[in-house]
Amino acid sequence: LLLLCCTEEAAVIVSGLKNTDVFMGESATFTCELSHPGVRNVQWWLDGSPLHNNFVTEISEQDGRIHTLTLNDVACHDSGTVTFRAGSLISSAKLLVKGILLLE
Image (tube, rainbow, N blue to C red; front, top):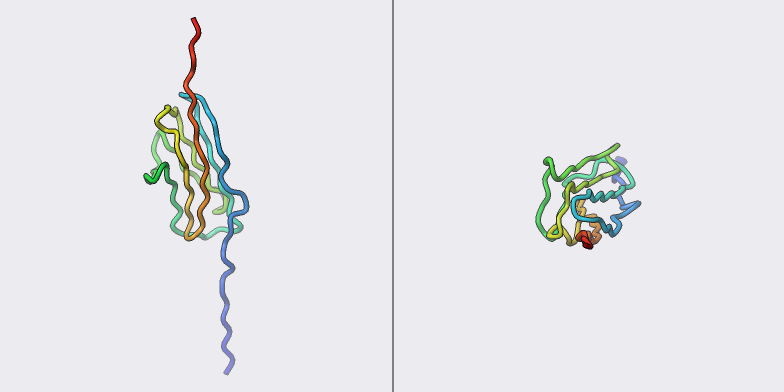
C-alpha cells in the first residue's frame, strides 16, 4: 500500500504594502502581491477597522495574486495603519494624509 500526501505550497507575500503620503482629497492606493492565487480570507483594515468595497473604498484583485486597496477622497482622519491579511499572511503600512496649507 502506497500513500501519497500532496501538500499545497503555502503562499508568501512577494511584495508587501508601502508607506504612502497623500494630500487631503487625493486617493491612496496600496498593493500586496502574493506568490500564487487561491489564498482565502483576504481582508483589508484601517487602524483595526475592517474595510469593505464601496464608493470610497475600492478593493480589487488581479489574477488572484495582486490585491489592491484604493481609498478615495481621503481626509486627515484617514491617517493610520493599513493592514492586508490573507489567511495567516499579514502586511502593514502607514497612510499619512497631509492637509493643504493655504497662504494668503
